[in-house]
Length: 109
Image (cartoon, rainbow, N blue to C red; front, side, top):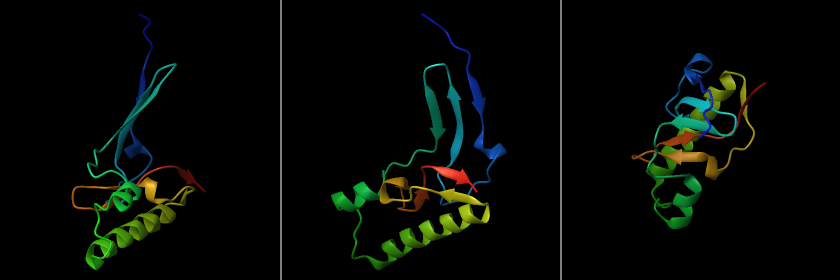
């Protein structure tokens, strides 16, 4: 079996956390694979939740919480001069209380 040297880095060195941004604990790589370590969000993404009906779209408070959380997360990213180039329901994860966490591709401007 072939062994590879691994490197590890922490996002906290580069980016401060926010309650509506997916918490990335770190990543490791070898010459073949890349692994990301993040918080676990058991409710999956917003797209699936909407398609499967696990979110009551007629409950204004739930929708308000999700929309406000997305807006607050995007404001935080933009305040740090970071752009999200693929904001979509599939890139919004939900925690156990349906609080949204933005994930996906973040780019500095």
